[in-house]
Length: 617
Image 1 (cartoon, rainbow, N blue to C red):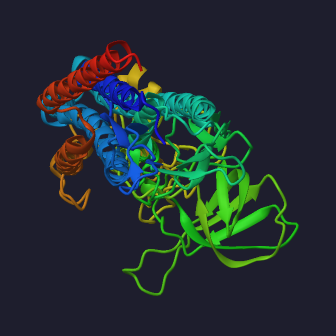
Image 2 (cartoon, rainbow, N blue to C red; image 1 turned 180 degrees about the horizontal axis):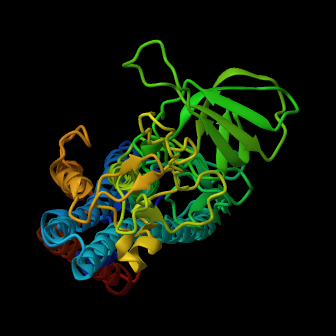
C-alpha cells in the first residue's frame, strides 16, 4: 500500500523528468547550428505501478526516464556515405582536369601555335637567303624555342603528377588520423555506456562526423554490433574499400612507400605506392575504391589502359622473358620505362633492361608487324611461362597525366622523325649530309639511342641509295628531353637545305641556292599525312579538345553528384537536425508540465499541512 506522502513522490518524478526535458531542449537549441549534431530527445514511460489492497487494483507511481536518444537515421547515413565518395571523386577530378585543360589551352593561344608558327616562318625566311648566317641563326633559335615549349608542356604534366602524388600522401595521413580518432571515440563511448544507463550521444555525433569526412576520401562501410560477452559494449568496425581500417579500438593504418621502379616512361621519380601497416599491399587499382583517393590515383597514373601488354614465354630458372602479340607495335607509342615491373599471371617481377626486335616482313602488307620484346629480369622465373597474358606496369582505365604525357611524346617523336629524315637527306653549306636536327638530351638510355646515319658512296653507275640505320630509334626522345642538335645549334652552317648529288668521286655540293630539302621541311607544317588527325597543329588541337571533353565530363558529374548529395543531406537533416520552432514549442510545453508538477507539490503540501497540523493526526 502506498504511503500517505506518495503524492509527493509522484510529483517529484514529474519534476525530474521535465527538468531533464528542459535541459535537453536547451542543449538542442544551443547546438542548432552545430555541424553534424543530431537532435536529442527524452524518452519517458510510466513508472511500474504498485498493488493496493482495494478493489481498484493497481496505482500509478509517476514517470521514469528510459533514455536520452539521438534522432538519427542509419539508412540516410549510409546513403550519404555512399554518395559522398562520388562527390569526392568527381570533385577531385574536376580540379585536376581543369588544371590540365588550362595548360593545354595555351596550344590555341600564345603557346604552341606561336612557337610552331615562328619556327616555320624562320625556315621560310631562310629560304629567301639560304647562305645568310643571320637567317640560319634565327631558324636555330626558333627551333630551340619550339623544343623548349614542348619541354615546358612536359614540365606542366610533371607538376600535375607531382601535386597529385603529394596529395595522396596527405590523404593517407588524414585517413590514419581519422581512424585513430574514431578508435579513441569508440573507447570513450564504450566506457560511458558500459553501465547501460546512458548514451554518449555527443561523442557518437563526433564519430559519425569523422565517418562523413572519411566517406569523401574513399568507399567506407560501417557496422556496429553488441559485444557478445559484455552488455553495454559495442564493437564498431570501419572498412575502407572492404578492408578493416578500424576494429573497435584497433587501427590498421596506411603508409606511402616510394616506388623503386617507374610504371610509365615519363613518370616523375618518387611516386608513392600504398601499403597497410601490416605489410599487405593496398589495391590502388580497385574500381570500388571511390572518393578523392581513387581520383588522385587515376589522375596521377591514368594511361587509358595504354600500357604494354602481350603474350609471354620463358623457361623456369631463366632471367629472360619474351613478349609477343603485343598491343604496342610502334616506337612512337612506346611508354614503358627502361627498368620497371612486369606481371606474369599473378606474380610480379622486375626487369633491368629490355630490347625490341621489329619484324621486317608480314604476310599482309596492311598489317602492323608485332614487335617482339625481350626483358632481362632481376629474378629467375619460378615456373615455365607458356603463352601467359602479361602486363608491364599497370593498366589504369582513365585518361590521366600519363595518357597525356604519352600523347605529347607521340607528337614529338612523329614530328621530329619526319623532320630529321628530311633534314638528313639534304646537304649543308659544307657539302656534308645533314645531321639529326632534333635530338634527345637524355644520355642515360642504355637500350636505345639516336645514332647518326652513315650514307655510303655509290659505286659508278649505281643509283644512289640513302640508307637509314635500323638501330636508329626515337624511344629515348620525349617531349621532356627534346632539344635542337647542339652541333647544328652552334654551327648553323650545318643546317641542310640542298638536295645531294653524286659524281664519280662521291658526294658533291649542289649549289647554295638549291633549297629543295628546305622547301620540303617547310611543307611539313601543313602536312596532312603526318598524323591521322591531320596536320601537326590538328593533332594537338584534337588532344586539347579531348582534354576539354574529359574536363567537362568531370565538371558535369561533380555538379550532378553535388545536387544528389544536397538532396540526400536535406532528407537526412529533416530527421536529425534541430528545428528551432519545434524546440521553442517544446520549451513552452515542458515548462508548463514542470509548473504543473510544482503545483502538485504545492497542493500536496497544503493537504499534508492540514492533515498533520490541522487534525493532529
